[in-house]
Length: 223
Image 1 (cartoon, rainbow, N blue to C red):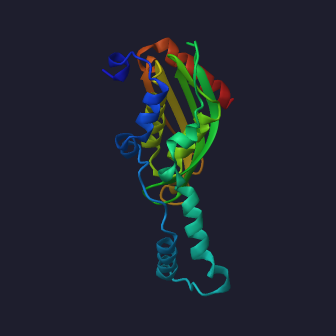
Image 2 (image 1 turned 90 degrees about the horizontal axis):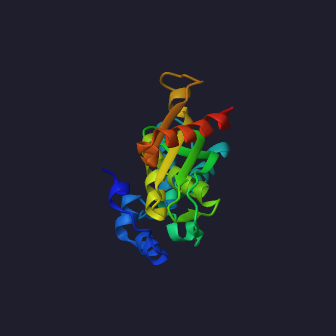
């Protein structure tokens, strides 16, 4: 049994705000981290350059530690995203029970096993109960969870679970397809392989017709 079977009362705006500010939610979704320590990151990159036999003082590498530290501040910014600021009151009460789908959301993340990128597209749908999100917020939620060290399976489920917490919908579905640099440029070196993951919650898990409708939309968006 999932939360859809146990909870049927729509959340009030203050309930949502309180939940988004709670330590329990911030901890559950990894939003309680501190910003990147760029000084420590610069030192670490400097040591890495030396470890691989490079000379950090040569002109081409002189500014590399600083650039990499700055880049990682952006690449893992999802850890320190403020969910209240991200949503920016764009949760609206509406009488709507039709499927809401946002397709082909580009995302970029870092594999936590090799610190190499994986890049792809996310397709997100939900069935409103009494609330909908502003259109731009779904891609921002995808960014919040992709811009950190990840595995694709966890990333997919975190996006779905977060939308559940925010909207209390009748169902959420997330499908993500990505190419992983760790399998393309090292290891098995399979350049054309893709990985697809999905999370189906609520009616998307329990109702075959609902799940099928969403997957047909995903299929059409890929063609």
